[in-house]
Image (tube, rainbow, N blue to C red):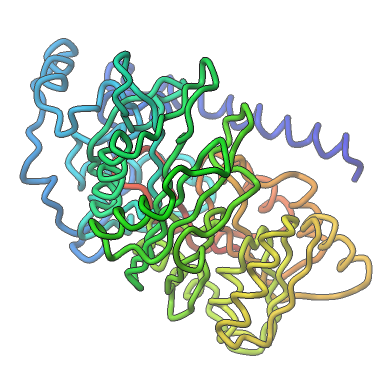
Length: 460
């Protein structure tokens, strides 16, 4: 099938799905129906009978602290403004469900996934967290200043480059927030100016903190517009005095007018310039630019779910697509005969090879290649794999990738998705290619937000 035919088929499928959804919407009570993707401004009634046991949902302090707002739109808005657990809620926009009790969040998210995947399978219970706060082990702070020149740090307001000053966040690791606060407090005494996006003056642009949840190692990345950092040694010494738990400090230089946080040049100011963390018994190197899930607790749950779903016997050949630094492939390696890992990003491939070496994994081969092209070449050559792991970006996969995978014809496909909307779209194509959805397990990787991770097993 040609590229243009594929795209046309893809567009027809989207139109069909949209028409079906519109028809379904009309049959429901308009006063009670709300759109999840518009911010979950009203409760979504769960459509599936789901057993929310303590193991999968967990108990949270949130449940005992949050009071339900009185009925009525105006009353809801007033209560939200007065009683929000987060003082930055209305300004920030990052955690849309911060005032929704945790068990209710899971019910709402489950309803959304269940609605989208209803044509394919019954969705299992949401796997939640026992302690859903302060889970982010990758914390980014933008540095700026007020009109008097006093340093401020925070995050960009959703959809803008306006900085919302923040001292602490209910989603972020508390140690990371404390380190950021210490750095902010040190700037004046060291005469370090924060960067001004409007006029291009100043030195410090961002601070990035990365924490190894299971190792306790901490990386601090100072992002500046110049490689010259005044009183560098004294600054490092003062920071370590306040936070001796820091294991490495990195200076990253970003002198470009860009929305990217990190620049291309970096140098360790203290320590090795990276940290390690452990996931599913495997050790992974984390550099400033490395992709590693921000919620390491649920990352382990997600990957263990993927391995269990695959029901591996030990004699399989597995293909890991969109493999990044090789996390899934390396974790799966003890359970299969061979892993073939494909990733287009050259830096990620280098990290993946190093991670395999660190863990003494010798049954995995890494290829720097486009996964779509690689699979089609394998299919054309008559090569076979038993299983494909696919973990695409939020936008999902492509018709070309899916067609190549169908041509390769693995017996099983494990699809790890970070967007149920793009997942449902892709499942339409995969199931038309001769596969059936056997299981779907949603994992709450990002509590208090709209985001949803789902692990799906398909068999031929």
